[in-house]
Image (tube, rainbow, N blue to C red; front, side, top):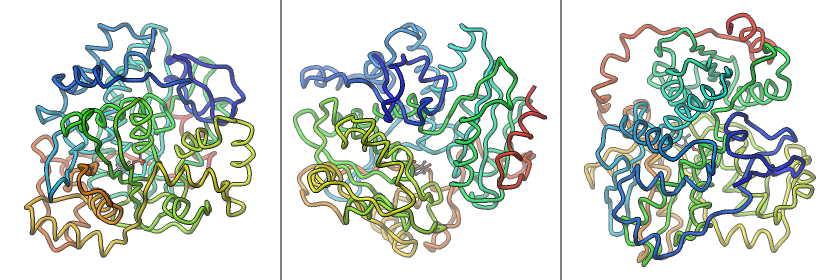
Length: 463
Ligand SMILES: *Cc1c(COP(=O)(O)O)cnc(C)c1O
């Protein structure tokens, strides 16, 4: 399996090359050259697999060489062994044909653990093999940071630097990052918002001359293909549990960077019978506006109760646009060169194709809190605010009540105490392993919203 850049300006790369980088050299994102097709018979035979077994079956053709099968198996088993639920990704029911896929049973209580536990171990294996050291640099709106630190900190071959927007992540999210021990762990609080952090990271990747010659940056944001890959698995897992391949299912996905839902789109492309994919957004609704009105334009940033979706630009959307532009890298480059300066539209035909694949909706904070309170009253289920956005958008968009509608429950409610309190409910307890989180010592450095502040820090502190 080879990987192409969405901007069409690079030669195809293998999995290892894609794992050890971020954006492609031409500024595009890597996508698989083609998707394996999974037959209905094969899916039937997968129904009895455990989560780790299914993960191995799905990802093997995408790795295709650099990591041997027995190594891959132990990476997967060790990673999902860190989860505190025997099903790894359990499904719970709300109303009729209305389900939650719980993706928050990993070490840092958000779905990011599914990919980052694996990514850390894959990196460790490949770097050890190559006798190579790298610097992991990532920006986080809250959940990626802690998951990346948990997934990668044990490797002797990485230093890890995580940027978060100063005072714009929840207390639990900040504590989960800044209390991680280790000489190779660095947290920077940038005096700006998440998009500022993302911009700095992107610029640092584009010019890595501040690093020693034998080092390179590796991305842990969802621009890293390995993250998307690991997220394909739970779409299959949930659909097979609820009747696929004999029955279609729909998914509603709380969306920020479009990484998680893009994995669902790929699952569908591999043959999983997915009926609808709902792009669930908060007030930061760039994708909802595009899908509804064919207007792709940046707006003002809103701070919401679902901070992991508080972003202006969904970087992974480019991977989908590449397909929408029939994989024409030049046409997509031209389109993206005008993005941010004007309101963009696609052709009528492309817009139809987009609407054929995705539904969308947008939910404000008041409604989010109402949904949290109602769902708790009606079903005794406490949802985090991102999940609540997903559930509400699923209800807004649902037409076929025969097909199961599965909302991805992306985080544990205890991570977002502010929203739970605003919904009038008691703050849920953190799981056992995080009981003493607020007593642990924090370490982080506040830096200016400036590329040089970040690269200087890395130059000085990363040996
Ligand atoms: C990261 C995150 C999201 C958004 O996921 P994307 O892949 O960026 O679309 C949604 N909910 C939670 C809790 C998250 O941590």
